[in-house]
Length: 77
Image 1 (tube, rainbow, N blue to C red):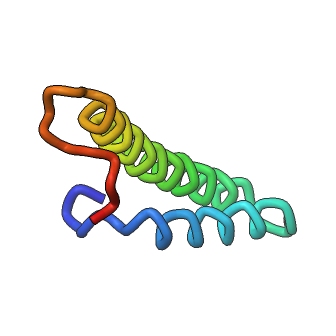
Image 2 (image 1 turned 180 degrees about the vertical axis):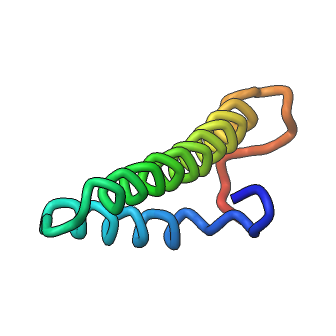
């Protein structure tokens, strides 16, 4: 995946769901199953990276909001 653009969280999650469905359906050769499993691992890693990034952004936003010296008030606008 290094040469291709990383998928969005939604794209990775959707493809991962399809990979799991295909693995659960069965009827694949061992080689096909291993390839799908490896692709699923990569997609799960992409999803985890997106989620970790979201956690960091959320934590930073929460910290700014709770910091009385930040100059931000609780008003949404």
